[in-house]
Image (cartoon, rainbow, N blue to C red; front, side):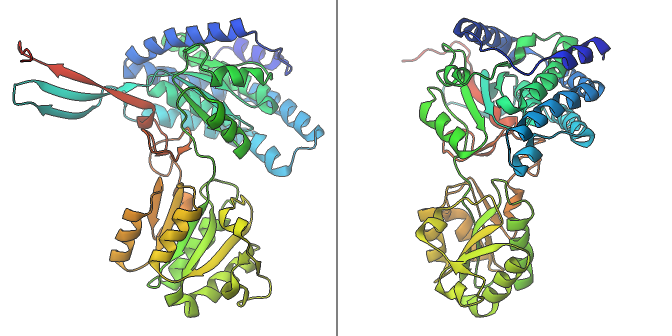
Length: 436
């Protein structure tokens, strides 16, 4: 990769002026044209662009890190929290992981053109349902610069154009990464507008994207906190792939193995407390509470997790504080968990349907019949049997990466990877048939 690109990336200042509405609409029109080129591009060309982008990310690692240091310094000066700074900060290992992630997306099977179904009608018509790109995908995200690479690469692999709007706190970092993506596009002969970056801190640009950029954007994907997702879901005039909250449950059934339950619960809650797949409520069946409740609660407390529990749970340990109604609806994203004893599997399912967010829920049991019932009746995007809820991740599903997790019931649900970034059309083959 030429040093000119990296030097140009280093020189970029962090304070972008607001883009005019006309400039944003031009970006939308250019992306719409680029989407057609991406949709028609052979897999070999898309993969060449992605591998070229990965190489550019590595070649420009120093420039990306220099841009990121400026972003982090500004965020620290504004008093950003430690968790925020961690999400924002890049280092050589994270840049390398970003490049590897783009290459892993290139290695995935091409999702475009897959024949999803094929059938013949009595009149001889042959009908195929075939995967096609969605078009132009707008991605609005906050403080994770790596989303620039992940989202751009996933959209391209699925034959789409992407319009990316990262958080103002990471704009320099996003610019530097975006420059590497564009270098890969140019190398493969694809339009640079296939992956566009809204290069401004002006929040009005978000509103313009939510309005669809005059019909240019087909789908919006928000990646960030609850306030961002809520705004997108409330204001968007185009379809949205998103989840508002991850109120995730682990239900310890009366036939759960205690050692397995302890191992799964500690991982599901404490491996990473700030991700959407982290467990926020544990439900323990009354049938095993006498043997299982105390060991599970004490294990959580001893690991530094605060427990807010019902009366039965409070009786276990003086460190347990009373749970309120709000705790059953809480997404803590912290080392805090709500806990209660439930009468049976009916009560567990009822609790999850009442308080859950249809994101991810787990049952721990040796009873295959109870597991089947839970998996069938709990209406969440992801349901697990005897496995940590922290597997709620596109990479863990073998998708290579994910652009987000969707909890709606239309089209994509669960981790949104390359296959979920396609729609479909019908191809109908005839031999002169007419309708009577």
